[in-house]
Image 1 (cartoon, rainbow, N blue to C red):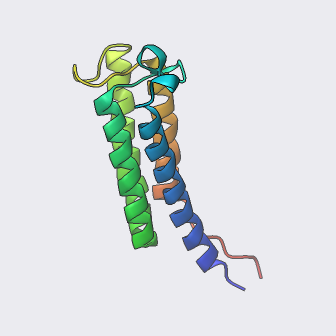
Image 2: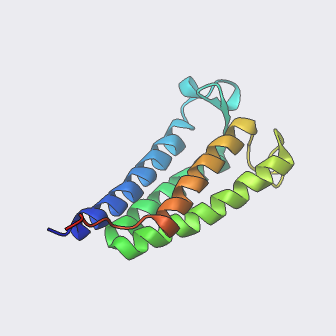
Length: 133
């Protein structure tokens, strides 16, 4: 029995999960109850532009995931590279707004770096497994 179908579903499911997570984070960023002083959960710096970027990232993830395994893999590759660059910019800007426009802090740097590394693994190194015969 070959598990190729499972691997394909798994990668697409992970992209949908990423997308939903980013969309939810984007929506929560607009709720004052969970963003005291502009900090999501009191930790992550957010603002309208940051929230919109998360919503767009989530929508793109889901859209690409439902299109197929190849587009889900492409999403992870592109997303991973972009968010790695965002994390690098975050290291440079620290607690200051990214590019002078997007709320950002050290907690965001850590989260963006983790999300980027996971996405890069899924986009470039994750392969479907087949059982040993």
